[in-house]
Length: 136
Image 1 (cartoon, rainbow, N blue to C red):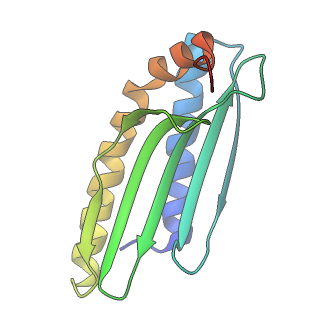
Image 2 (cartoon, rainbow, N blue to C red):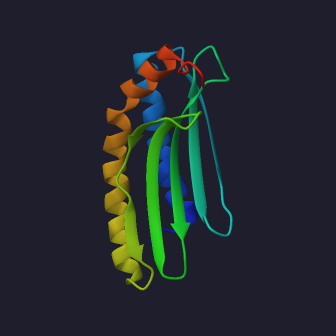
């Protein structure tokens, strides 16, 4: 398994690539990023995209969840009201798996995640243009 600092580096590189692709589609889209951790989530990353209404965002997020027996990485793209737009496959690993094997699987997962985010840049822009759903 990657260390949180290395995972952050990889995810931020992915996020820059996603921001570049979104800007290519619509240069008026702005974005901001952040990450944090706590006892349950050693790593949480988010990237929020907005157009003229900063109160409506579309968020790309990555979570690293851990227990004594399992490690899980998940990623998705959703509106700020919780509407799921695209969900990437989870990576679930047994915590007792050898570190080199967890590292290999994590590297593979992040490579596939790169394709996922790039292929969903248009979904982000379309959702921002459409705005929040009525009643949200």
